[in-house]
Image 1 (cartoon, helix red, strand yellow):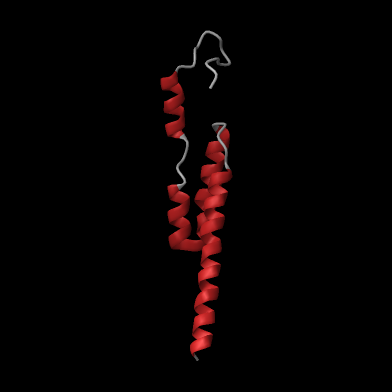
Image 2 (cartoon, rainbow, N blue to C red; image 1 turned 180 degrees about the horizontal axis):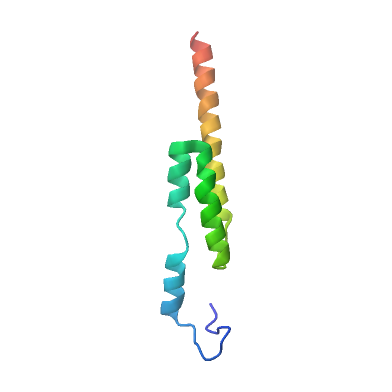
Length: 88
């Protein structure tokens, strides 16, 4: 990681980098809302990815979390439908 900043009078210290990394939103909110409320997981995915983008962080982890959890819903639904159809 570079220790230069936009303003050469303000050095970028390792402590400043760590503090900035702590401010990047966690994926946990996206995962939990998607897990419990399905499609409404889009709300934290959009909010967190916008905030991460504004901070210069990658945004793909929020969309991947939403996609995997939401996709798992459909797989589970298919398995339940197949199992209930097989037992009837």
